[in-house]
Image (cartoon, rainbow, N blue to C red; front, side):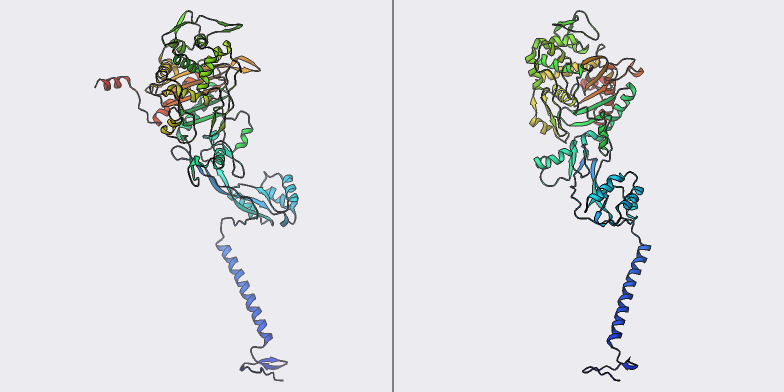
Length: 566
């Protein structure tokens, strides 16, 4: 049988029914094409397998599920010198597509074996309840994510997410605050950044925010933190806190509260002992408040540093009696009332002013109204609504008024910087910017007298702040030892000690505040619990390390005298 391909000229032949036909027989052509396609496909697969075996990538091949949710990137946070405090990194998160799971219970068991920390029952409940998307674990270490990914569980995959990290750990932790799992600021500067983005984008200038520069100085904060830890050990205190502020710009250059808090582990804040005592707590600060009372009396021109008052105790006001820690019979000058920390003499100065004038002066220093910083609103100061003589008398030496330490430090800054009140800030700010918003609260003359009083308290043989002196740097300061209120009554054994110091004393640039909660009568404190034996020397040690850091020139009396003679 011959088969003719009409209209075509083929010279090749093939066999059909035992006879030869041309090469392009349709049956043969289909078989040849099929063999070629299969050969090509298997060659491609084999090539890929060899490539994977030899050049296997070490990174995770992540697939995006839709939708996963959008995380916002955050600007870096740096200290005043540009050192990194917070930044974003990419971290893998493990998720599941429940609709793609054949046996959810079996998958959960395998995941539990790889990730022991997982809540097995809760995860299984989520996988059976949701149909599209369930996060299994977020912000994982890449190595662990790779190990889980390598299990090859159908319906389980990995996706990159943004995670906030804090390279300095707990250093400045209460200032930085923290973010949640979705990278949203929940406390501190982190929360402020998100709020400013919405309410006032001009805070950080025009355009995108790539970096937020704080007033904090990492080195200064480290010094403060380390010395407070040392104080906890030396004096066996329950907690400690401190702050360093520039008196001209209002910049907070260091803040620490112990126990401290690592922003990477905000869950530790469930511990009631972990909170920012400087801007987040209220305390009766004791005799450091006498600095304010002195400024009030001197500013009113009702007294001078040489005016003498009888401090023979006790001072009786109605049914109340006021005594001194070291009683003196007879008269003391206003200067010596401050140096010897006389409650009686200070109370008499307040009584001369009267409760109304006393309250007005504290209002002038912003000590009776709630203060707000970039960290948020502080708690309102607590005191009685109506002041009588007894309230004015006790508040004059720091009892009967509970206040945030940072609010008090801001007032002291105004008392020593020439009389200009500057609101504190945690953002970088120039002195020029501060002056534009500052307000005069006392005269230059009164400010100079307060500086002299603070210096005398360190140098005078009767001064309560003698142990704060750190030659060759000149320090001024005031001690405070306040009996704590326990169950509505002042404890006779539990005290809160504090110290407010300035340096250099004649022309202060910084104010340092230190507070110790329930220090014990240890050998280091010579068996006493008063501030002069614990808070004062702690502040001295801090200043001795801060002064060289801030490149302050040491003061040597002989050399300075020779320089003046030339």
